[in-house]
Each structure stands twice: as structure tokens, then as C-alpha cells.
Length: 487
Image 1 (cartoon, helix red, strand yellow):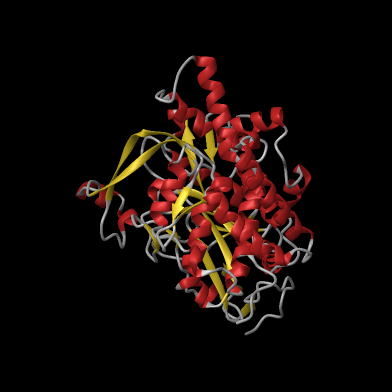
Image 2 (tube, one colour):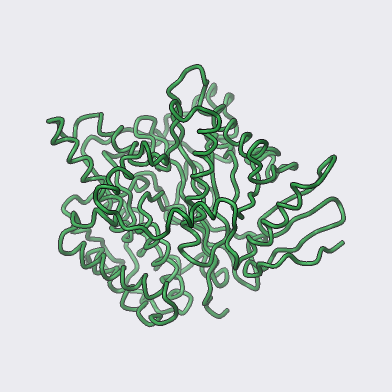
């Protein structure tokens, strides 16, 4: 199959929730209230009236929105989760992603619980040992991109891109075979342990002060299809619902929720270019890693910032040098469009900056901004990396409320680089991207909202059913038009 010149992208983010008022009950109840308010009162979309999955996404657990995205409760862990609309442009993606956060904040304000409830787009629970997903989805040319040599070359890129895409974290975790759950825990939370063949215990690692990635310590395999207690860097999705014309969905599990719009854009933009290189078979076999999971962890934990990895042939090479190899090959796409030129320019600029002094990149990279905040806190409080309070500082960096977020406070003072405007984010709360099937689905969602009486419908990414006889086929992800119904 020919390489894709246009690529659909989307991101799914699971949010953490902290409740500081015992009168409000547990976080699980609060996120349910947020979901119900947004669908039933704010009417931002339509709730699923039939189960998408009887176990993981039962009826009423969420639904599709008028902005093309999807908001729902993930049954595993009872997390509030937002999936962006299908996007062709990075700016559309980031605006749509942040629009989901704005709706959550609107709910907190309207429910008058914003003082007692905080929502975070972080990826780690420092004390409980849990990790939350921020998954990237890319349309790729053919199933060859879901396995084999192409994936091994992609793993090299993923293991090393954290030098600019990582969000940073205090401390680390060690995974030990065995431990939880016991019978009582499994009986109380059966959905959490479906299809789990083994479990592990998560212990704090006091040898780590600070690392690039929140997720690296929790990745066990390079590729795996079932990932609960078996987390992988890549989770293949052989799903007909997401396939079109021979293309299919690549689902990346290793990624994190960036507060920095710049780091977010660079993460997704560079990955999309590398996928095109792989589709055209332009990446040499010699860049494959000896052990991708080990390399992921070693790069994340290397406070010397040399970030060396071992290649399959036994030689060592720095992550910056490996990234330059991908960049050099991607330069062939310069001139394709303004967005591609921006990605190539910033990719080169940030690698140059990392080589000179990473700490100069606080206006662009999350892990640098967070480290600066932590160092300022330790200096002002006269403490050091052993202080447990640093975990709270780390967490508040990821608060999605600009009035509470340490990232937003830092960004305002230090002039963090933005990729989208506030106006674009507000517009994206109601308006889907205009150049993908998200526009058609959003229009159909609006029509479903006007149905009177008993509502019988089904909405999915690739199609919408209205009653038993009208089906709208949205299998072409590049077509924004509402098709004629069949049936």
C-alpha cells in the first residue's frame, strides 16, 4: 500500500480526580456527576443508549460530542476519559484536546465544586502506584505497520523522543511479580482484573530523584495486545471499525499528557513524520534497539542527560544523535506544507537546545519546566529531593484549571510557547474539525439531540444508526460530509 500523505490523528486522555471535601463522596461518584451534568444539562453530546462494551463501556457511561470528540467513564479505574475528534492538523488536535478540558472545568464551575475538586491530566499516582493513559492514535498504511521490522524501528523513536516529549516526574517505581490483588479485591472490582494472567506489586524507588517520563517505569513489553497489568509501548489494534482503504489504526500506549502545547505538537508532529518514513521504508535496520523497554527506562532515568541507548548491533548511541537520524531523513518532506516545515524547524531547534543546555528549554518542554518549578520550591523551602511534598508539587503541575495549575503559573511568568489561541480552544468546544468525518458525526449528533420521544440510536466513530433502518456510513475518515442514509 502507498504511504499516507494525509494522516488522521487522535489522542485519548484519562484524567485523575482529587476530592478534598468528604461530603462530596468518592472521586468515582464525582466523575459520574461531571459526566451526567455535561450530557444531561449542558447537552454537549448524546449519551450511548446501548452498550459499546458490556464490561468496559456499558450504556450511559459516556457518548459522542458536538465537537466531534468523545467523553466517557473508563470502567477500569473509573477514570473520566476524553478522546479527541479525528484531526488532520496538529493545531486542530490540540485545540480539540484542550476543549475537552474546558468542558470538564465548566462542569466543575456549574456544579459549584471547583474549590473542592481538582482534575489532572497527569499519568501517575505517586503514592498508589497507578498509572493513567494518554494514548495516541495514528492512521497508518496497512497492517505491516502494526508488527515486524517497522514497529521495531518505531520503538527506537518512541524510546528516545521522551527527551523532548516527556512530562517529567519526581521519583520512580519498581514493579515486582506477585502481590495484589487478593480475592476480596478481585470480587469487589472484577472489571479491573478481566483477562489478567499475572499481576505485579508497585514499590517506590528511592534511588531516583527525577526522570523524564511518568510512564517509563510501568512499561513491561514493547508490543502487546492485552495490556492490563501488561503495559506495552505499542498496542496493536486490528479493528475493522478503524480501517479504511487498507489503512488501519496504530495505538501508542507509551505517551504522556503534555501541559505544554509546544511539546504536545512536537510529539505528535514528529511521530507522524516518522510513520511516513517507515511506510516508505526509509529508516535503516541498524537503528533498532537491543532492548526497547530497557532503553526507555534508562533514557528516562539518566540524570547525566547523555541519554545513551544500546543498539541491536551492540554499539551505544545518544538519544539526540538517534533523533537527528530520523530528522535528517524527514527533511525530504520539507515544503509539503507549513505545518511540516514548522515541525522540522522546531525538531532541529529543540535538539540543538538539548545539546547545549536542556534547562534553557523551560518555555517549551514539560520536563524542563517542571524541574525548574521543583528546584525553585526546594530552594525556597530549604529542602531536597527526599521531601515527599515534591510529589504534590509534581501533581499540581498537571491541574487542568489554569487558576490552580503550577504549569500555567510558570508559563505566564516565563512566556511559554503556545501553538493555539484561547479563542481556538473555545471555538473547539462546540465546533469539530471541518476536514474529517468528525464534522459529519457532530452534525448527526446534533440531529439526534432533537429527536422526540423514545430515542433509539447508536453512535460510533465509523457510523451512526438512527432507529433500526437508517444508518449513516462514516467509514471514510477523510470525508466531512453527512452521507445519505442506507436502509
